[in-house]
Image (tube, rainbow, N blue to C red):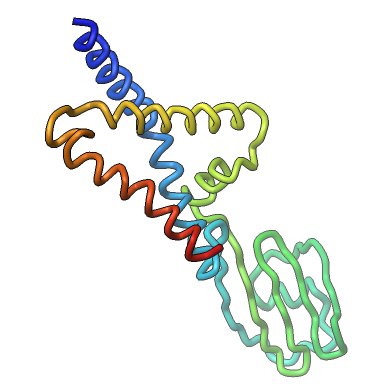
Length: 181
């Protein structure tokens, strides 16, 4: 009787904790894939590059360059890395002007929706109370793993084929630690 009561509580805890963790698991899954491929792309920011021609621009001010580009004439700052080049910085764009030719390279950046926010949480940039949420989530995942081991009994459970899958789940990270360290 006590064994059945324990099994019932294991199922209840596993089920309800699983529902609670579903949303958090999606946040960490999306961010985890994005962060794992950071060497291939910037998961937080989307950068686009455009080339424009405005004609010779020697002697033009930053405001005049922006007007020729059809942009609002306000900018944050400018920089002259050399005599040929003027860089104009606006909100969300950088314009690099080759003054003699008038060729302008524009680079814009914007945050990637959803991915930026999930990375913000996953990498715990928020700190404060989110740290406790993240810790509770990690503990909840451990409880889900433990209760999951005992959900099914018999030959399909931990005493049967389950032990092989559970063993593989432990062996896989150990193998890669051995391989890389």
